[in-house]
Image (cartoon, rainbow, N blue to C red; front, side, top):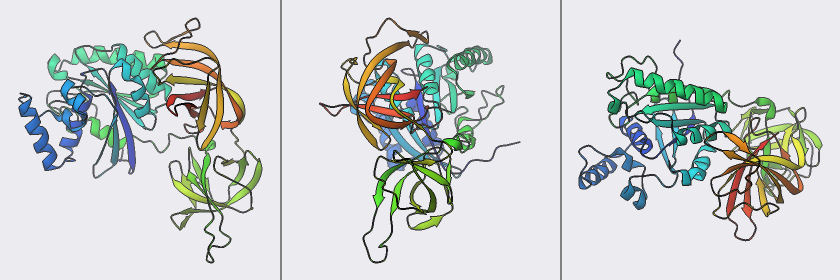
Length: 420
C-alpha cells in the first residue's frame, strides 16, 4: 500500500564527509523540484562557466560564503527552503569536516530527518560513523542514507549491496531507529526526484518520495507533553480586563481543553480553560504549535515556569547527567561555572564532574582521558543553583536538552542531552 504524503512542514539535515555531494544533492532537489528562480540559475550557470565546469554546479545554490565557493566546501550551516505540492521543507546543509562537528549538531538539533551521504567509491568511513552516531544521539527518528556518486562505480548493484550491509551494521551499533538506504547520483539526478534508468535493479523509492511520505506526526510520546511558558499575556484593556494567558510552544504530544495540569515549580494544579491561536479558540494543540493557554484558576505563573500534565511530571533536579558536545575553542573546565539555559529558564550551573569521553571512531567511552576540546562529546554531571524540570532527552527533546553559556563572554560553549 502506497503511503500518502503527510501534509505540513518537514525539517531535515544533510551530513556527510567532504566532497560527498551534500550541497550538490540539495541543489539537485531545488532544481528538479523547480524551486529556484531564473536569476539564481543564470547566476550559478555563469559562475560554473567561469570555474571551467562543463555542467552547472548545483552546489553553488547552497555554498553562499565566498570561502565556501573558493574551496568547494561547506563551512557554516546553510538553511534552505523549498516546497512541493505535497509538503514544505526546511533543509540544514551541514559541513563535512571534523572540525565542524559542532555545526552538524546545531543543524541536526531541530531536524526531523537526517540525510547522510556516503561516497559509493569509499563506503562507510570515519565521518559516516560520526554523523550516524550524532543523528542517533540526537534521537532522530528517521535516517536516510544516500549512497552517492553511483555513476562513478558504474551503478554497480554489488557495490551498493556491500555498502548497504556496512550501513545496517553501523546503524545497529549506534542504536539508530528507522533507516532507509538509497543509491543515487546527485550530480545527474538519479533517484533524487525521479526514478533512475541506470538503477533499475533498485526497487525502493526516490529520495524526494521518501521525504514527502515519511511520517513524523507519531514520533512524539504524547505522555511527555510539556509547555514552557515564554510570556504572560495581560492586555490591561477594558475589553480584556480579566484576561490572563500564558504563551509558549507545545513540546511533545498534545494538550486538550479540560486537561488537568500542574504548574512547576509551584506544584499548583488547575485545568486548561481554553487554548487560543492568534485569537481563535481551539480544542487542542500538538507538539510544535505556538499557542496561548488560559487556566481555570488564577495562579502566579511567570516566564521560565512549565505547565505539564498532572499525571506525568518531569523530574525536578539540581544535579543530572548530560551527553555534551563541546563547541568552544577553549577546553571544558572541570568545576567550571556557566549559565545553563533550559527551555525558557536560565540558572547558574557548575560542571561537577567529567565522567567519560566518547571515542567517535570506536564508539567506546574513555574513562581516563578527561580533556574535552572543541567538537568532543562527553558524559558530564551538572549541578544547578536552582531546580530545573528535566526529562530524558529521548522522551522530550525540549525538556531534555540544555545549552551552556560562558558567564564572562556570553558565548554558547556547549549543547547537551539529558541522559538517565
